[in-house]
Structure formats: C-alpha cells, structure tokens
Image (cartoon, rainbow, N blue to C red; front, side, top):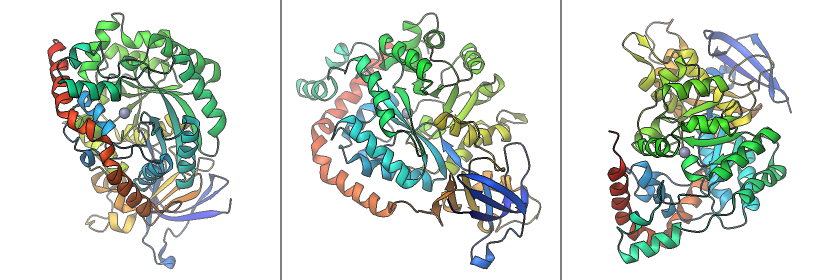
Length: 487
Ligand SMILES: [Zn+2]
C-alpha cells in the first residue's frame, strides 16, 4: 500500500487526551506509521483544514434496504413494525448491501455490524453472502456479517393461533402463507455459519453467529451456538431485551433470569455483543460487565420504534462496555453516525451536574468499542502510531467558522454540531473510502437511484401483505396490550 498522509489542524488522539494541533499523520500497510508536528494545513491543495479523529463504528445494523417512511411503517412499535419489513421487495443483495454500506461510510463509519436478519433469498444463502462481502469490500468498510439464525415464534413471542384468529379469513391466509414457513433445522443453520465463514472471511470481512434473539431461537439452537462459538472463538451478535414485551416474555419463560440462562449456555462473554438491552436489570448489567460482553445502544432506533430509553449511565457505572449502533433506523433516515453520537450524548450525558455519560466513555462508545464488537480487534479507537488507520476527517474550517473565543476545545464543536456533511474524508485500513463527502469505491448516487427504481418496480409483489397489514397491526396491538400486566 502506498504511503499516505493527512495534514491535520487538530487531532483527537484518543478518548482520554485533549486535542493536539498541527500534526502530519502518515499511514502505510493499513496502520498509522507516524504522527509528527507539522503545518496542519491543506491549503496548498486548496482544501479546508482538517480535524482528524478515530473513525466511528456501527455495532448494530442490518444492511437494510429501505427506510421506514418509504414503506409506510413510520410510527409503528417494534412488534408490529417487524412484519412491515416483509413489505420491502427482495432485491439484488449486492445492490442493497452496496447502498447500505456506502451510506454507512458516508455517515462516518469505518466498521459495521450487518446482522443479516433480512435475507433477500433470490439465490442460495452462500451466494448471497458472497455478494454482501463483495459490497463491503468495494465500499471499503470493515464488516461483520452476523448470519441470522432463527427457528421459532415467527409472528409473536408466544403461540400465534389466538392472534391469527382475530384476523379476517383473507388476512389470516396471507399472513400464514407469508410468515409461517417451517424453519430450517437448528443444526443446519448453525453449520451454515461456518461454511459461509470459510468462504468469505478476510480482507475486512468477518462472520459472526447472529441468533435473532432468545424469543426467536430454540434452546437447542442457542446451545449449539454457545458451544460452536466456544470451540471456534467465532463472535456472536444478538438482540436482547429490546422492548417491555420481550422483558415480559423473558420473565415468564426464564424465572431464573434470561441473562443467567445465556451465561449458562456460553453466550455471555467477551465474544458476544447484545443489541438494545433497554430492559436489563442491574444484576444483569453486573453479570454482562463481569463477563466482558458488549452492549450495542441504538438511541435513534429506540425512539423511532417506540421501544424506550436504555439505562446507559447505569450500565457504565456497573462497568459494561457499550458501543453505538444505528440499527438501520437513524434519526433522519440518513445513516449519519455523527448525529447519532451527538443524539446519544444529548440523551444520556447528564442529569444536571450529575454526569452519566462522560466524554471519554462517549468516544469509546462511538469508536473503539464498536470496532471491537465488529472485528474482535481491540486496537481501534485511537490515533497513534501502530493503530489501525481508521480515521474520520472533518472540515475544521466549517466547524470553527463561527468561533468567537479561539480556545474552545475542538471536541465541543464536534459534539455541538458535527453532521455527515462536515465529513471531508474517511480512511479504513489506510484506504480513502470517502473523499470530500463522496464514497470512492462505488457510485453511491447511481446505486441509490437503481435501488429506488428496483423497489418501486417490485412494489406490486407485496401488495397482498400491504392489504393485510392494518388488520395484523391491530391484532398485534391487542395481543401485546392484552398480555402485558406489569405496568
Ligand atoms: Zn436490530
């Protein structure tokens, strides 16, 4: 790899230390090779000055194709929203993934989790996984493909017969036909993960076990994954306690505690990351902290699908490692990870003078911890010689354009207003993945247009589900409200 350098007016070197000014950062072979005092100006190249910080990470996402408002599923609580995903027509997996990863990179993210819960299914899965891996490499992000494993509760967290009985015969027929397919046996699903890994891992791509969540997986499947992960050291990524209805289900089915259960079967340890965890109890946070598992917090998503607010301050106090996730549901439907970081900070930072989310923890959350959850490599999240050359470059001249006091810390400006349109560049492993706000490896605007046309052309293929959805939504609301007693 050729030698590259960035002239930085400011560098945010790591979560703990203040910004330093006027540095030249050199990189080669995928890592930072030196950081020296320098002029810190790109002016000779006619560019604005730069602020350089570690690339952001997205520790929970799904390489999703469409935004909520595109398919009329805005303002739908999670349990009714999940079936809406079936309204999105299947599209070419390279196209959907390249758009998703391209938007991810444009939003400032160098490492992304693709919990692949929506298989397009136009080919066999290994072929689809190859297309997803190619898309990640073409864009240039580090990507973990968490292969979706699921074998129970296709519609609700308990038997669905009563819920289906609330539907008209035509809606019941449609929903049964679309959602109630017999699952692939657990052992086959788990074996598929290793086969796919052998096929696609390397060059920025890793594979993880991606059990959907305890309410969607049999005990047999989860035990198989716990055992396989212990043997192969393969990482695991799953949803946990995202909604009050999942908490209610977990308490009924695991009187000894759902996190204790996961621990017993080898699924609470350093290799595991859990998405959401809004309804964790303090003793469950303690156990997760002791075992060194990671929690991916999805602030925007939790608001958008009405799930709640995670107890981030308490998680930190109890020693949990937390990471940022966008969950395909960023606040403005634009995959802007800088805004997500700012929003998470605004929501969780403090109650008055009582600081709940200190800035060093925020920076670890938004950078290195997520990179670790995705790649299994704890070396990221710092700008120093020997560290991975995963760097986010912001336009310092724009960020600082309205400064009155000259000595305002640069991080204040990032947390006050940085959005993806302040991004000058993104480097991943030393490769310039985004330049002047544009993804370098794929023609993202052209792919986005093609994707939109494909989705519109295929919209008719899901008109039967669209027609049944209002009834299903009402039936799901009655189902969950009726069984929820614990206030
Ligand atoms: Zn999710």
